[in-house]
Length: 237
Image 1 (tube, rainbow, N blue to C red):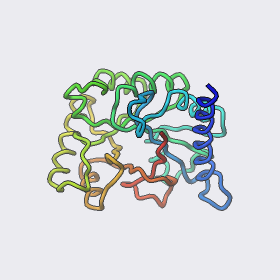
Image 2: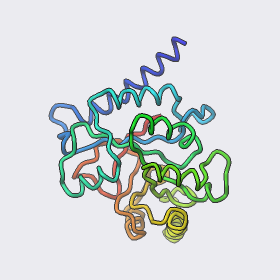
Image 3: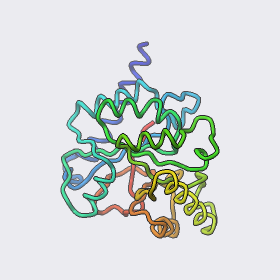
Image 4: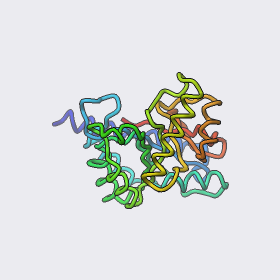
């Protein structure tokens, strides 16, 4: 038990350190001009330690975000404010989740909903269409959408985009967006690169596919100097 408590406290401390570093450091980016976006994947799935966060750790993060000096805003609102050069509240945070695992719906969604924290889920469509075990269904995705969760695009097959031909990437994006439009009624404005990597050519493909902003997996603040098609995120596991 003591070791588990220590792990929880360490996880919360790491989040606090990251947020303080980017949003509150003297001489750093001004808080009113920037935000930090956190990225998660799985919740309470201990079989996948490289992409999982333990539930007690996640609850510690939620406690910190709701009791600390932070403002958690919907990611589309953050992106719009940065793009339009509008001020943000001090220590603004955005929450994102990649891939669309079932634990997002079963574990993260109820906890974040109860805490009043908005978030974005980037969904890869093939695992949902093929009804892979461990992934959400379209009905569950729609339920979250109808409860205020932002749904973003994450390709169809979760391919490593820089390792594939542009033609393959273009077709994958087209299929993903077609399925998202069929199931949710629109092509999501936001996109996240699988594995967090993209080239300039891939960024252009994502732009031409109809998205207005895209996220990688490299730590840093989201501010006016950010490339809108390679926004930074802080990966938390």
